[in-house]
Length: 244
Image 1 (cartoon, rainbow, N blue to C red):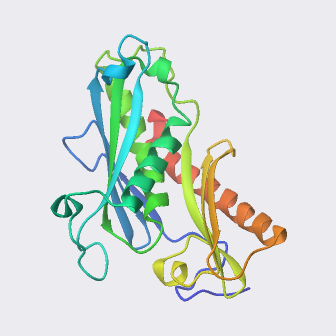
Image 2 (cartoon, rainbow, N blue to C red):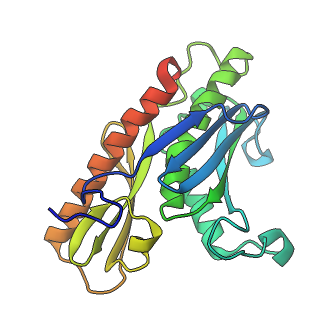
Image 3 (tube, rainbow, N blue to C red):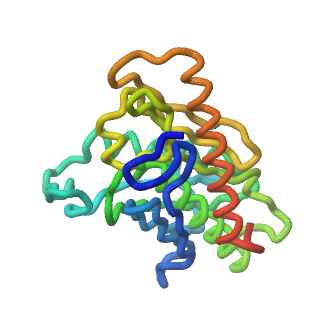
């Protein structure tokens, strides 16, 4: 079996840790690490919804993604200084929001809004997948906070499932799980897979960066992604305990 630069096997996750409740101020938070990629996910709970949802008996969950200037090897300019949010940032923010809403019953949430902020502290590949995985933990705790405060009905079940995400790719002809930057930057095929805890797909983003891939390679990547998401689900369960 192929051994990677960091000593992992092709189907092995990087070390994953979730530090739940990292922020003292946020209603829900989690500091998640996928190897050297570290993302702080915070969930802010507001009683009330955007004007376009007022009176409809439904809540709203959305997300914003950002990267600190020195999260990468070279400093990047803050988007607030540039005066506009970049296309990649918009894309990832929307992806995180879609992934979370796929497992949220907005009627059970009531007329409440939860905004998830995913801030990349350190980037080494897989920042969007780490953001989604950590965001679910922060979201879960924010929902429980809302229930404790009486904004969400005690017997309501706003979460229908859990959600996690992982990257996969083909490097030097071999399908691999959870790519750090060194692998991601030279992958022939790059893919991000978002799944529910029960094993259903929410989103699959895949591109042939180099050589096109065939169905057998696609099937193997999906298998690796499903296995990785299942492993992440167990890590989420361990972090959340009774809250999940």
